[in-house]
Figure (cartoon, rainbow over the protein chains, first blue to last red):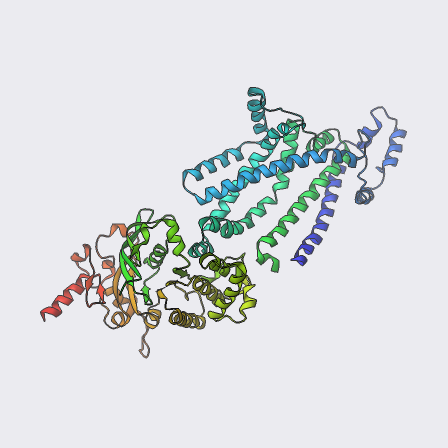
Length: 306
Length: 324
């Protein structure tokens, strides 16, 4: 078990390095030279050359990459080209808001998806299943931005129950959390239902029933534990989904999180800030998948062997 | 003697398609009953109906399953559940897939002990080891910590049997318990079942498509064909004086010791698919003796106090015998 985890972590290191190279390369190739942003439109060629030298843009690509990498590893992600503030400071000030939003949205999604998915599988081909599956289909079919707008129109504009922007009270969390959590919950619910139905056909579920166990125990202890294997695989994409959702939802609800920081930075070609955020997200996704691999081993003893 | 189990006119449908028709048989305490038939003849469905494990879309449409004289089909589902795994236990054909892959042997056996014998975790853990010992597993303490994938097929079937024993059953239903195992392991498992039966006095229903297993292990047997019991009798009656043409065909298709045969006999034709469309004898299409009268509903005809067959020709034979 321990060896398995260590091996997974070691395997993730080259992956993260590869990602960092791609992230740096992509920004390098992207149009819009950051020096122009730093120097301003009217700058003379001498000034531009001086800035190039100061920021290291005159060096060959690979040298620039390793210089950047060495700095990042020391925790120095550079300064924002626009505001001149350290990138680390900018990220640190925004990260908690995104984390809080993602936490509640994830919790909401899990709280909806698991009970409904298990219920739909246990009562398959009854009205319970039909209603739950119909809800899932609707939830999955609604794009996040559209759902956000509908929520705003209904609960903020028409009913005036909830605010549309700001982060001050719990009420501010309701709409963004719902917008972010619902469609994820819908997809997850379908996954829970499908994999549980698959497992319920297994012989060992029949054995569990033949032992005289209560149906609840059969479902949760014997079936769901096995159904978790494919479900956890699906959870690997959870963070990737949350990132995309966060960018959209934060923009619509004017949420001061990383998603909005990223969109603004992209539009302003804030070179180092974009690199840092994308690198961070990538590492987080790798970490999430690492966690999934470890969870496999926790759930399924057969994985621990190999 | 008071019957342990008595199945009366049991009818089961799968999504309105009949799969069991008028299945009737009974079982005394301690007795071994063999149920023989091809795949799809309704052997397993019969067993699952007794256990209350028939799953969607299967449904019992008629009949009774009397357990100590009480109809299980009228019982609340939860009362039937409490009998499962304690009074009546079942083992299955596929030991490879019947154990839960994510729990240890100990967890899976202890679960039964805690549920039906009210033991706590520590007691259950100790008792689980003794049950493993009882089913002939060496180093039971070490095996308890194993996961199913670490055991061989024969070992897993022994674990299944240990789990069944843990409820102290009066009836063990063994549904093709050795079909998926090596021949040598098959013999060991059957010997084990026999020994355990002698030790505990439990009754057993042995479901198989192998006539030989019934001959060696059962007291009585019933032959099923297309969802019906076509013949019933003691093992010697079934093998020495088979009455139904299907039973006779099955016996003819067995290879015989010391007999030179180029080709084994096989019954011509196949099992009918839609039983709902058949009013009379389901075997009539493949039967060498069939006539128009076979297309009407058939009943069981008694040949002796213990033997009966669902064939009108049997009735004719018996009458002939009486007339002569």
